[in-house]
Image (cartoon, rainbow, N blue to C red; front, top):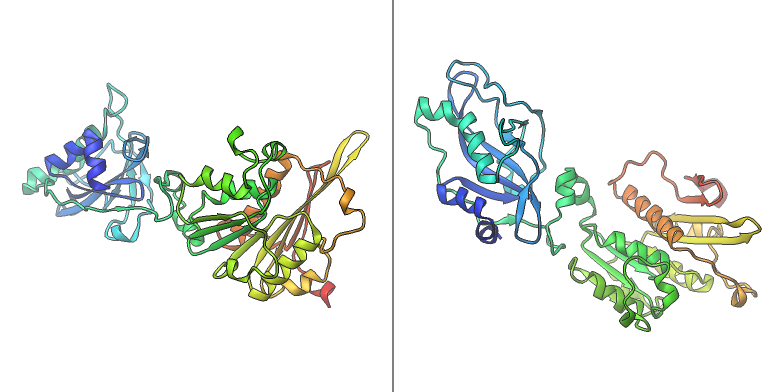
Amino acid sequence: MYQKLVSRNPDLGRLADKGYAIAFDSNCLIVRDIPYLDQTGSLAWGSLVAKLVFIDRERVEQDDHQVYFAGSPPHGLDGQAIRNLGGGPATIQLSASCSDIVVERSFSNKPRIAGRFADFFDKIESYVAIIAGPAIEKYAANPFTFRACETVAEHPVFKFQDTLTSRAQISDLTAKLENDIVAIIGLGGTGGHLLDGLVKTPVREIRGFDGDRFHVHTSFRSPGRLDERELGQFKADVYRERYAHFRHGLTLKPIYIDETSRAELEEVTFAFVCVDKGSARAAIFALLAKLGIPFIDVGMGLRRKDDGLAGMLRVTHYPADEALAMMRLGLAELSDGPGDLYRNNIQIGELNAINAALALVRYKQVRGFYREDAAYKHLLFAINDLSSVGETDFDAHAA
């Protein structure tokens, strides 16, 4: 990747050719071996860091005119801190391969005439002149060491650079999801939206299961395009084709999960249940509880009133050690009533999306990505007034 970035981006190539010690990590350009004067006037060495914005797999552009610096405040020959650097205290999350670089501050020195740097070469040259100039003059220090790191820290799951995570500086939080193998059982409206959100997380593997086929009505409550060639195919095959370009570790099978599906869930660490038939849900719940897999079950109950649709969305988290007790509470339908054959199962795309989003947020809370002030095991969201209510503890009920 180092060679591709340098060869496809002339400005990065010029930096390498001139001898800057460049590397790439966490969607950032790293320039090591930058000499500067510390507050005592002694020679010190720091590193510049600039964010990369990926245009495609190999071409990049600048984020803005700012850079980040690993080092103490640089000083001039007069012993004073260099003026007009702007910025302030800041950090950048880099990978373990760049553990020698600890970013402590940002600099913001915009070109006066142009208002922005022409490219990365222009930016780095400008900041090096300001920061390293005094050290070069006093000690004849040389920033052109031709030292380069030949590897780029990439996430093994994604086929493109995850620039969203690096721009938001949340790499440490997304890392909490990396070891999970997640199953989505049911790829209908809510399951399809869940899959769409989950493929963009760094979970190690996603396994999806659904034996149904993709029809016109399915597309009206599913994310993404409608391609006529997809109609009549298995949902699992349709979604596999859609997301195969995005990530590795995606296995979608056109099968139903029941009490005999133990092998399909081997090594799964978390599951989402997105089915609308009580008896199927009961079999899946029993298997997940037996295997000790925590899971979230989603549900939707809509009724038509004279003045429009009303109803509830449900997200229920079953921790592995409480699943059996919670199943006995009847929080989700686990049987098929006599009228189920004729039941009008209304589902609407935006409600499927909300249900999926609530489930995904709850999962990320469990894993520590989102803050969790109330560990809801059972959450209801009312359509008519957009209110929610949740329960965190069922011990008294279960007793």
